[in-house]
Image (cartoon, rainbow, N blue to C red; front, side, top):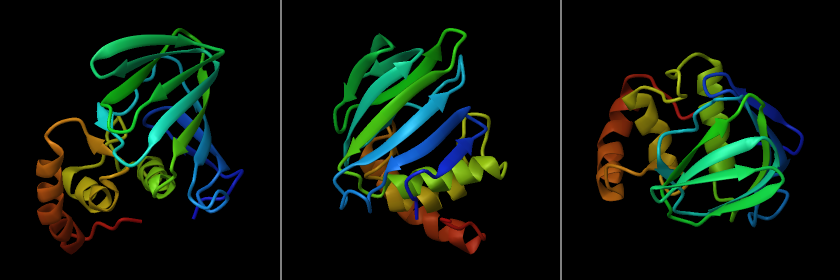
Length: 177
């Protein structure tokens, strides 16, 4: 379980994350993380958070957000909000790292998802974008589809696919932790 002050690093995506306020700290109302991302780094694939909104408080650098197909270049200091259910991703622009404080409201189980995905990347079990193989993704994703799902294929397809693949992944030895 995450704790305030805990630092995790995703070497595949070049992100370092510090938990500021955890779900336990806020009775589930918010997860606040301080994220520093390396220059020129791509964020995760186009994705959706069905369970929460994501609010960025950009402290340093420039981030190009893609939100619902539109590009938004945000420079520090600035704020940017991603509504619940909106397809999005990002890219760090320029030659300097970007630092943003991100609120996820409500917290849901997203901190556990982040710990799992950063852990897999740290163990070398993801590709260079931080994405694990399909069976590992199904095992983790099946538990966290409300927190993180791809923008495509449709959500119901991902839910059905992970419902079938997650047990196969567990049989193959993949674990959610």
